[in-house]
Each structure stands twice: as C-alpha cells, then as structure tokens.
Length: 365
Image (tube, rainbow, N blue to C red; front, side, top):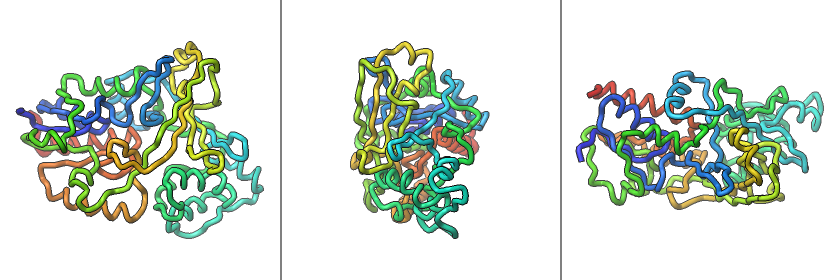
C-alpha cells in the first residue's frame, strides 16, 4: 500500500495529525483496533435517546481561537459550561472548593495547612487549604481514584484544581466551552473524511506489514509498542455502572457529583448525562440515565485512561522515550504515547504542532 504516513489510533490526536497531513497533500492511512473512531472521546446514544460518553464525560473548552476554529470545521457545538458538586457531610457543595465554604467550616482567619515546597500531592493540596477541608473534599477522592496513599503521588497533580475566592459554579472559565451537537464520534468521522481508515485492526499484532514511506505515527501506549520489555507503565481506568430511571426525568442538580467519602461507596463520581445534552433535546426526553465510575487498574491497554502520576512511572517512561528517540521513522505521541494526561484542546494543539513540524521537515506534496 503506497502511503506517506501511517497513523495508529483514531482518537483526537491521530485524527488531528491525519487531517493536517492529508490537507497538505500527503497520502495518509489511519488504523485503530477499536471498532469505532474517536478513542476515549467516543460517545453513543442510549435506547432512551440520551447521549452517553462511553469513556466518561468530555467537555470541550479552550481560549485558543485557532483551536476553536479548527474543531468548528467539523462540528457545531452547543454551549455547555459544566458545574460540579461534591457530596460532603450529606450536602452538595461546590467543586472546586470555594473560600466561603472554608470560612463557614473553619473560620475567617483560616490558613493553608502546609507551607514550603511540596514534596508530594498531599503537601501540595494542603498548601491550598486547611487539613479538615482537604480530608473532606480531596483525600478520599484522590485515594479512590489512584488506589494509593495521596502522599505517594506527584505534587504537580494538584494543578488539576484550585480554591476559589468566589462561589462561581462553573468548573472552568474558558472563553469557548461546549459539546458537539451530534457527538464526538461524529466530530472525528468528519475530521477523517476522505482519509482511508481501517478499524478492528491491531497494528502491533496484525499491521506491521504496513510500511509508510515517511513516518509511522503511533498514538498507543509507548510501553506496549516495545512489548513491555522494560516493564509496564501503570494506568488507571474506570468501571462504569449505568442506571436508567424511566419514571424520573432528573436526579441531580448538575452533570457530575463527586463522592470523596470512601464510606459512601467505591465510586468517585456519579454522572447524569441529560445535563450534558443540548437542553432543547434533553427536555423532550422522559427518564434519566446515571453512571457511577469506579476506578481500577486495567491490564488491557484498550482500557488505559489515566497515566499514573508518580516518580517511578515517570522514570520508566523516560527510559522508553529514550529508546523511541533512536527510531527516526517513528513518532509516538498522544495521551498514551506521551504518558501524560491531556485535555482535548491540549491534545489537538499538540497534534497540530507535531503535524506542522513534520510538514516543515518534509514539505507538502
């Protein structure tokens, strides 16, 4: 097969690279071992008509005008500004933590528990808030999510949240926020229009015969590419338990309610999908669908969702990355290839940069 670039993985990273390279005149082939495109951004419609994000909630947001123009080439987005609640002491409180809650529970003269340079996640979180608040909102959620003590995790994991000075209910405050009206799978299908795509094809087991003239772009797990011969990188995934209520239209005040208390269930959050639909359509649907997400450590690479944020796994990743650097005809990238959690806009932005670097090196046809 005469192809310039072979892209392994039809998620957002692979689809973005494929689109940019195809638009520049190169022959591109995309393969994916899943039976669908869009990777972990995939979604589907429940028999009730409720759209479900197969691998957990995905809300697109960006402040970058170029990224926003790029995704709007392929989909129409409806405005969605997510808000999250956390179940604490039987009450639903704002997440991220707001200063008014801390003043209410600790007092006006509250101070963070930790000062200095944090050496691990727990210290980094305590540098933001008093211990009693950390233990109610953060500790249990984090330890359920990762399956280890919070003090063993990397300090930079704390960048995923903050303490708010106001009671602003929105999770994020980006200029552009939304969800594709026809779903993420349709978005990626449009991104891959006129680009040959083979599904249900495991490149590592069945596709090595495919030889691109310029570059193999691999967006799967970097350790799997080398058959785990230096050891397995650690990941976390989620088991999802769905619960349909035909006779109740709404059960939660928002799309996501966190469950940090280990005594109230092993799940970390409960999702109500109708909140993540265009209100014009959601209000016409009778019944509602909840999903509880329960973290675990998967062994099947198809179930990898979150790279593990600790020093040992980062050191192993660096060893794999050094080996990959010695392969000039291979580019490994994406959430699994870079062993780094990316928001969707970050994944697309990095893929566009990588595509432009490839084009600068080879030029367009």
